Every structure is written in C-alpha cells, then in structure tokens.
Amino acid sequence: MPRELNDREKEILELIIRNFILTATPVGSRFLAKRCDLGLSDATIRNVMADLEDEGYITHPHTSAGRVPTDKGYRFYVNTMMRIGALSQSERLKIDQNILQLAATAPTSDEVLRESSKILGKLSKQISIALSPKLSKGIFEKLDIVPLSSSKVMVIISIQSGLVKTIMLEVNSEIPRQHLDLLAQVLNERLSGLTLEEIRQTFAERVADYSDETGLIRLFVESTERLFDEPPETERLHIAGTENIFEHPEFETREKIRGIIELIENENVIVHLLEESRQPLEVVEAVDGVTIRIGKENQESKIRDCSIITAQYSVGNAVGTVGVIGPTRMDYGKIVRVIDYVAKSLSGALTQL
Image 1 (cartoon, helix red, strand yellow):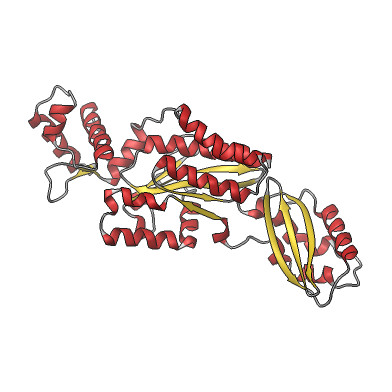
Image 2 (image 1 turned 45 degrees about the vertical axis):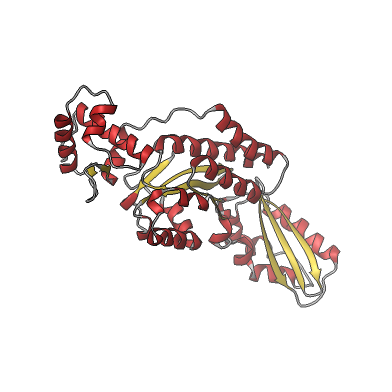
C-alpha cells in the first residue's frame, strides 16, 4: 500500500503541478524557495522533491534540474487538490449565447452540437468534441416518407429533442403520394412513444396485419435494420479546436503532431475513446459525472501523453458526450467547470428542440 503524503509533500507537489501547468517549464527547488513563500530552505525543498520523485509523483527531464508531474502526480492532484470554482460571467455568457440562444432558433441538434464543440474548443484551448446520443435509446416522434423519383423515396425519422435520421430506399415503381402519406400515418400511430431499439425488435409484428398492395411495407420490414439501427459512428461526431494543439509546447515536434493528427483523422477511434471514457478506470468524479483520464490511463497509444476530460448530457432517454483532448499539462479545474456547464446547457437546449 503506497505511503500517504504528508502536508508538506502535498503542498510542494501542488505547487510543482500548478506552476508547470502555467509555464510548461520544469520546476526547481530554488524557484519554489524564492517565489512561493514556503518558509523552507532550498535544501529542504530539494529533499522533499527527491522523496516525491521516489514515490513516482514527479520526475525530471534529463536536461533539467527541475521536476515535472507524472501521470500519478496529476491523478493525485485532480483527486485530492484540484479547485473547481465557478465560471466567470463572460464564460457563462459565451456558452449561453452559442448554445441556448442557437437552440431557441430551432435548428437541428447537429447544428447545436457543432457549435457546442466550437465554443468548448475556444474556452478550453484544447481539441474539443461533441458526440450525439445513440439513437437506439431515443423516443420515436414521427416518420415522413418523401418521394424523390419513380424509383426512390426518402424516409425521415424524427426522434424527440431534434434528433433526425434519413434513409433512402429503392422502390420497384412509382408509388402514389396518398399511399405514402397513409403508410406514414399508420406507422406514426403504431410506433409512437417507442424507442428505436424497441421498434427495431418488434417492427414486423406491429405491421403484420397491414395490407399494402404497393409492396412498400414489405420493403420497410426488409429494411428494418437500416431504418431503425444506429447511423455510422462518425456521423455522431463533431470535432473543433484542432488548431489549439499548435499552441502547446508538448506538440512542437513533428512526431507528436503527426500522432495527434492521425488520431483526430480516425474518427472511429475518437468515438471509441469517448465511449470508453464512460467506463470506470481510476476516473475522478469531479463535478456531476465529469470524468478525467490521464496519460497512460488511456488505452490508445497515440494519446499516452494526453488527458481526456468528458461529461455526459441527456436528451430524454438518450445520452451524449462532450469533452476535450489535450496534453496532461492542462488546467484541469478550469476545463472541468467549462465542460460541466456545456453539458448541462446542452441537456437543457436539446430537450427544448
């Protein structure tokens, strides 16, 4: 069982982490003795730092006498010392204007999520992500069938809170508009209030007695998986703030930049990371479900030097995720409160759509 840190060790570890987050420069004992008013000699601080290094909370680059936090040090910091605080009035105003006011104009949920990822990137100075909810848990609202040509119709499935799915179906011949409208009316009556998952599992039974000479209902039964299953994962994802990585010294080398760019371009991996972040693994529950994965707690090798901070938002029964990816040297307290507020704003905004 690891030894518990004493108050002096905790204070010096916190100062190392806070100064390293601020300056990106290894922190030395002389700096702490002169700048931090600890009332301790340089030698005493150096001894404490040596003990913290032995315990694995800090380490030192080969070219510097200063120390930098390890993943273990950051984990201890966010679990026991991180100060969350409240958003400033200007930060809240930016989020409200970009999410709540946008939602009031009744756009699609995708537009709200896209704008949410942008404002999250601006406020966090990190790569920001918004993942729409899985549709399978969404409540069916209505279905429209729109003729596009003599051989093609578009099915528009609306789910509560502005979520929409569209599918193109090939038909054998042109179907009169009144037949399409009648089928849509019947399906809306029979599917109302169900989740897409429930519809997918029981659709054939619910329409078994429906007489249809056009063959369209048979096509719907045959296309049940396409109609009521999840869309491709990448369609759920909105990424912004990628330009922020160039502002961090951690990504100054070409190799580090290449690794993070490759990750961003592989959207399926990003979705997997966000879904994975919901699973318990040494994760801090910082504010109402905000979670943090630090460095090697992430399974993906390309982000072993990064942290992922995420929070869930809810749209009825469906749950989505917002978050950021950035270097382990980030202002965790600030980013946690920003993500928490964005997630709560999204829950409120999307529920009103």
